[in-house]
Image 1 (cartoon, one colour):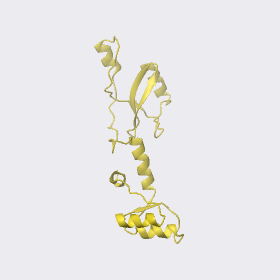
Image 2 (cartoon, one colour):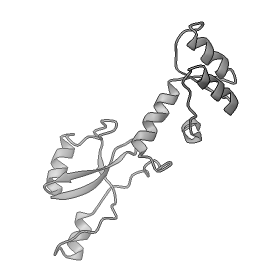
Image 3 (cartoon, one colour):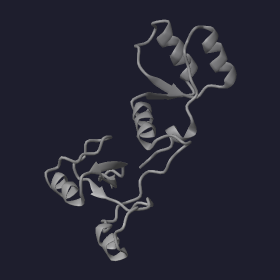
Amino acid sequence: MIIFELACGQGHRFEGWFASADDFARQSDDEMVRCPVCDDGGVIRVPSAKVRAGSASAASAKSSNAVTPVAPAQPVIAGLPTELVAKLREIVRNTENVGARFPEEARKIHYDEAPARAIRGQASKEESEALAEEGIDVTTLPDFLLRDQH
């Protein structure tokens, strides 16, 4: 069994286990190797820092480790897996930014004075506590979710 470090065209990195390098090549050519995050079929091998055990000569190891360069994967943020960060950012993108009107809009939605929808915006600690006392669920989003990724 061989474990290859793989990446898709979107930069998601993951491991794949194969019977041999030829088995990986065959599955890759048939687009059977797909990214588990975005289902991209354009998967390539990337350099790996893993140590290869066995009796292979240095020349053999060099030829079997040939890889195609890939853009670096997204950096790990706050110790969270990149897939989770990407999903959280997608959720945030699907919210309406109401800015400083957040407490007012949250109350309107809670009391059925405005259409129910996912919103985000700014609120002071005191405003957030007041909303919570009224039974309105709010949470603070970490800054890395709000930064523009383009």
